[in-house]
Image 1 (spheres, rainbow, N blue to C red):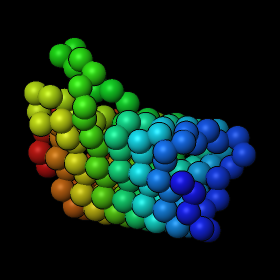
Image 2: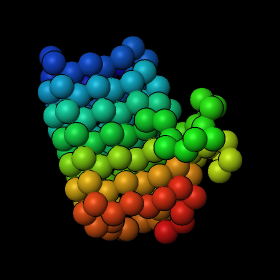
Image 3: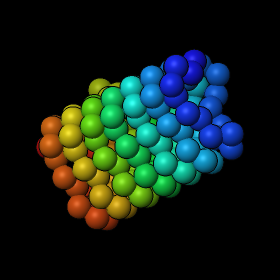
Image 4: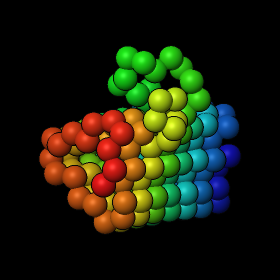
Length: 147
């Protein structure tokens, strides 16, 4: 469902079932999966992919080539239900990857508000990241980490 005042580029693929908040921008060549919920004023620059049971909070900005919500990089993952919740006002820079949880870790990866994920950083499955956290370029936060 597209909200009033949102702007979806004609080349973006937005599956049926997506919830798009007021004032969102979905840029060129983005892919947004059917179970995704974008809060108000979320901006996806070009070439962003957001899939899975993923929530992105209000005023979050995601830069090109980010991979958000794809299956966890855990060999024990067998397709079970999982989630990724990203809070408000986060900055997710180029080529960042963020994975949802696994059965073994509670099935949820959660990110707080006002964080910055610099170029190439990774947040693994079942992590809990608090508010105002900065993850530096090319850093990896493995699964089951709490910051």
